[in-house]
Length: 570
Image 1 (cartoon, one colour):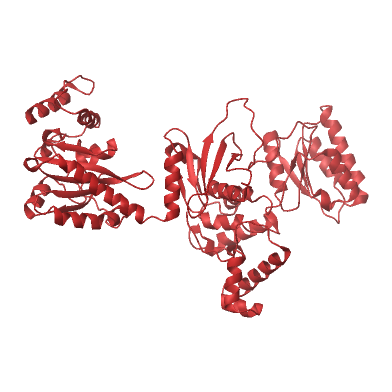
Image 2 (tube, one colour):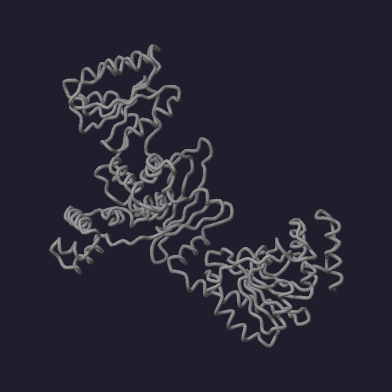
């Protein structure tokens, strides 16, 4: 039989990958598939690679498998069998042999720790082929692609994490004369014991995420399962997740009102990608399953929460107004509108002051010359000067409508802070966009952080950890964009390492909690505690003394107000 198998393999190698070689009744289909993969990968069938790599013997797989291998080594000592464990790359990371003779025989074919036994390296073999096929395999003699392994037989099975991801493989092997098909059942039993230890060493929340991933994921639909600390994604789902999108998605999902059901639909910022979200309550804490899809052209979208609440601006007669509170990013949005409208005109910013009149002549000259003007802080216009500004807007509208000007006048204003006459003008123009404070729109913070870091750290020396980004999103920002910019500028200047962690943030930003409604008394107490901790440099004993309360009371209130939050990483 062995001669027939070897002959079939040699016929395939000689005839080529596309040839038809008769193997029915001689070679199992699984082995033939592996031979063809080996041939396609131009694997050498006569010699073995001799390069030894350093392996991680402290990996999760090795820690879980170690006690199992030790126990079975004693049981198999008299059989001449050897246990092998490989990582997902096919490198042997552990070997347990019963006697020196077996070790010497295996050393001759480099079946030892550090050597690569992936299918792409040595061809058909138990450790490598079982991972490719994702099933248990039994390979003996000339079924191996490499002639150097023809005197051996082995059974192997993939070892999977609770998520279903292949972490490596386990194999029981030995000389072909001692081979027994029952080795396959034994190998499967050992593999199951290793997987049970992997599950036992996993956190309950991780297992809950893994179960949801296996339940709701398939190979074609982009799927992400996530909680505040972890993300699981299949290959199609990987392009949709990164540090910023994970933090933004978590905040949006966590703050969503799920009382109406366990499903919701979202629209990713600046794209046509729809997200169907499901809240899963199983496990220690709720988590979410997300499916991503791009709607067909013309498909009507349901009214859903979105990262982009602003509509596309309608055609105007040369005037665009952005309305919102100061510090909410009005100028940034106006610049975006300008970029959307035209790339041909320069944009000249002019900031109004309460102590000065509207510079009508300067603005008129710029607009006549084809330069777009960004008139910032229109709310500073005093009531007696409002007619002058209204006339400027009206003149430009007329000039744009008649074709005498091609330039655009952009304005930023806060309706609530403006004089009554200016409010009437704002109402008459009608905002093209509205901005809100960062406290009310935390989903904007990841994008703003990226934009600000690019400006204050042009060399890209710093990045923000997920935990730090979450803290920024969970904080109140009374100074809005200016305060966020100031914080990031200070961090870039003061933090000596590349990744800005939560512990690097100012103390009051570290002591944040997931958003929930607090009573006025709770808000005052939270602010007092945060200020005391800031003044004490984070020393809780000193802060408690400043507040006039006991340290135990302070710790209790920190927990109750959600301020006792440690650094977490994703």
